[in-house]
Image (tube, rainbow, N blue to C red):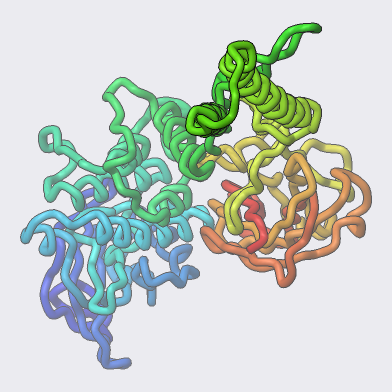
Length: 536
């Protein structure tokens, strides 16, 4: 027996109608909160009028959604056609999600950046799960998105009657804009103050080839990045492309990671650059140093005082006969003696200064050189990267020793370390199983660090969460798989930091994918970003 109100089985007792009507090309869908009499729990029951052939594609979509298990999407408990054929109804029974709808929350004003990132990231992760099984969710609106009491988020109406993957991505962008501005997307020109989120909204809603987001998983990965201080990030002009802005942001990161510049070598005083050379048969010049001048002054004073005292003593001895010749000799000879003493002292000081100057000239490294001559030495000895800092990758190449010769998207390898998580390298699609269709044990990318360096771990980002990887190291970019010992391994869900048990000094790092995840027409895996970090 079916309910006289909705034509549903007696098991479900409708309580009240919730949410807006969903009008489609095949009919109208109403949503009710209902009680499951058998299991004694609340459910959401959605009714398609009319039933019959018009509703069968929707029922088929609901049965596909029944295999999903993610908190971001309401679970599908049941899906069937009711009684009455084309004059009756079809229904889908969903999990009832308790909480405040996004529309109700935004009545109090827009969300802050952190909350908006969290809500949309969790929702995008759930939508990405549906896309992996070939299901476009549809129905993404503030009235159907519910904020659960435990901080999670859920979509109440799963699935909509129709939808496409690109429509889901555009709807996620519109929801992000609504969360940040408090206004519906398309209602005027709302201002998003965060440049990276404004770019993400534009990319999600873009229909231009090559300008939009590749997947909902890519959006989730971008939203998972830690919010940055926007005071140091340049804001783009409207006509600046996303790729240009991301490039500038990466250059800004590299400048911050390089640290302060090395101090310049101190300048050498002009007087010390070139010591005076004596010509044969000439007297040395007066030394320019302060110590030399002070010594000369003291010597001259001593000689003068001594001569004056000696003359005074001679004048006082009246009883001693003194001839005019001897007096003249004394008057003339004493100043000459003082002059000789000064010259001898000057020679001694000058020779010592010249000897020290010659040693400085001929001893390598004894005198700092001018900044211009020190530049090659600074270039040749660059300071080592700080512990935990990312290593600049010199390049990468596909490593496929068990392949049949078919390229494994070799041209997309640079996308795995270009600083943009929205671009990625992907394996080929393999049918039959996640173990590469039982054709080979894996495939990967070898990254060249440029030189042997101590490595402590690798941070990986993927747009296909759930892939299984091994991180291996080696001394050469090719050879057998056994030439690359395993340093660490794990499952990558979005972004994962895989630390080595012990630091490894190596030039080549191999990211070896061993397990794929469901994708369109089979199984595949992606590597969106790789960051090799130095050992701590």
